[in-house]
Length: 419
Ligand code: NAD
Image (cartoon, rainbow, N blue to C red; front, side):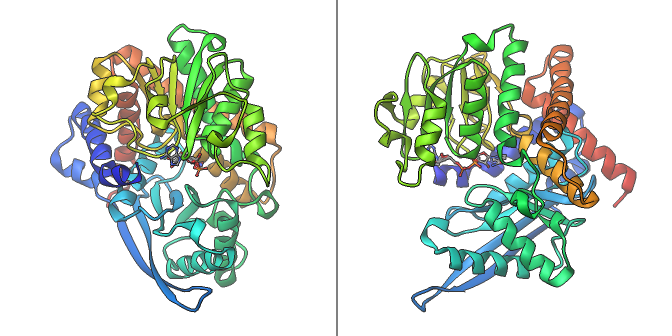
């Protein structure tokens, strides 16, 4: 799956974008302006391993657009990343922040390492070296980093330390920090919370009742497990979940709290498919093809392709992962009448609370979790309403409506500022 994701995300992103350009009837010059990243950085990162050997890694940061505010985007530590991959994901961030009307642009980056193969000390050195070599390119008003796959609050704390050593205390250089270091309450759960909210609104838009819905979720990490938890708590039946090792299904609904508790135990199972007594085993491909009301891909990109799109039976797909449906699968699903809520809307809860964290850092004040969750819901609802209005008024798909709104906003900012 990782190899597939590496080969197709840029093409997928460009294809969705071209559709918005066509709808806006943009000339070639403007298309070029909106497509091309502002800056693409590749860094050499040598690391002396604990055994004395030297291993060379590459670090990347792609900054796509900053016409509406500083660049903003996650850092992914994964062996299968490259510059092309980050161009697609950085571009996606630009449309996501614009759609949510956050005062940020788009960026993405990371290191081509497998964090599970490195000791905590080695990872700390690598993360701090990456930060040092990005000197001059990141900062609270320049480019703000956040966690993505393979990184979390710990890595953000290391970046904060490395950056602050040179520039003085600057918590706003990263979001998704530990709460004790200026992170926001509610940030950790925010993406999953946003996915659950958008799922509820999409179900209501179809005239259905969340409590009667059967939902399958691929990926049970931060995003997938929180989305599963909030949907389960809201009364939906989460009938299947999976992670990299495989999954579990239970037709009368899985006990999500039990699964999270089992995986969270220090001596607990490493994967869902090592848990006994909670449901039947199911593979990742079979989960995608289940006869459910809602399918939520929340792991890697590129999992729904032209090859398996014909097997998808869920009438509603919520893109919790980035780019989980390829550009080749998208028209196949559209033809079958499947509604897809695009990633730039569905998983925008994380960057929205990252924005709230950045604001709290600037005013040196902490809001309680209730306020953070309330503001998250208001911002996501406003973006949802905008998209839903365009869908019903103009006969667009949710993806077309979301891209259209986002691209128009970025283009307006570029035109106003000049370049
Ligand atoms: P994570 O590392 O916490 O979890 C990833 C999950 O996917 C794990 O359960 C893992 O076992 C599973 N997985 C990995 N390979 C798989 C495979 N081949 N088949 C099935 N499952 C597999 O990552 P996350 O933070 O939950 O991110 C998940 C997705 O959501 C990514 O695409 C990420 O870019 C996107 N996203 C995350 C955030 C955020 O705030 N964390 C925000 C926006 C988008």
